[in-house]
Length: 471
Image 1 (cartoon, rainbow, N blue to C red):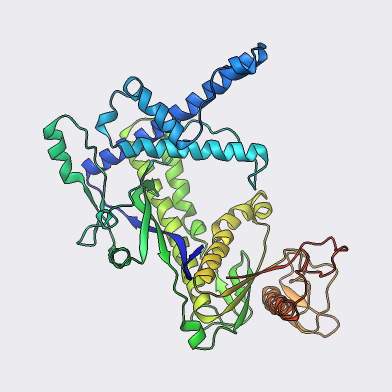
Image 2: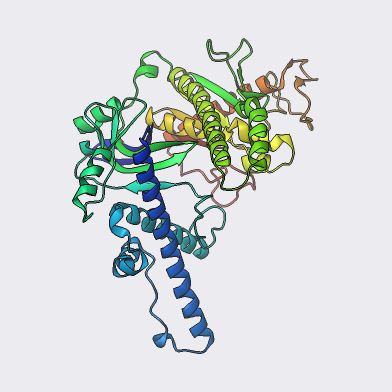
């Protein structure tokens, strides 16, 4: 998100499925191969330069006499590529120069992540030195950047994406023949994006064409103006609070039932898309294993399996978008729990596969950016908050609650209810408490809270802090 001149902008991705002709598909694969070739060349040159400098340093060569270091920036790699492309890739005129730029930019980004991770400037898991991309295992993709002519990316008939063609082809017949390959047909209309760009409310920053899920797709990186949604505020839903307890038996359990989204108890059914297609996947895997490598039958089966993977991914994304869109349309405050998805997914057996199939991380990601765009509030409850062990009626906390116990029974007050419903209600109550605590701190003019929500300046409790993020 960025703010300028009292206007808020954000960058979002817009993806369209492409339907290229066989000639266009061959051209796209050559572009993706050129990008991969440039990426591998850049990584190899940097690795060779580091090896030479390391050998000279071990041999006792002075620092001033070492081989000059190769620049890791996209500009430096592009400069070296232009100097040696005639020898390295004599076929460079057959594809667009943007394909090589795409690979060099990706290599510069990978090298930059490695450098930042080595210095401790990059959060997350340690990133190693980038490896070379394999033709069989890597995702074929190529990126194009052109900021001057925005509408040139989209066809006026609203069903076409422009493909940049090589302009330096010496053969005029080849150049004329490739003019018919400039527009790739899209399976859905691009009218909405075309209208945003035409009115000046959106800017296309980059276009990435890749082969995923057995189909070619064009991903537009669009920077557009955010307009706050007035629907929830107009209907008085801005003050409505809902607690969401994500799980595996049910995709989500809400603290209040929602007509058309949940059942009478507030459960959102888990589509389990992977489980539904698991038998077909196993059958295709067995057939692929019996085929000879490089045969036509194996290629055909690999395409079928890729299409099935794409169907599973898109079906799962459709279900998650349906749930998150309904939530941000009906509620102004959404409370969720900060789950340790990495630890849950690392467990062996069916639990890890079920965690991956539910895509709980994608559910939270969609809620995060959708609440941000609509000026709603997303409250993230600390993962150590005992939402399942606390009684939503009297507030008493159980010392121990087995994972297999699905019914919560409170001995002090005698309340008996579903475990997930009890957790969802506690999450909603904790979200309200955190918001009220933030409001009181802001109104009272106290000093900023410490990381664990304790206003004491010197003494803090050693607990993980519940966080409330206002979008």
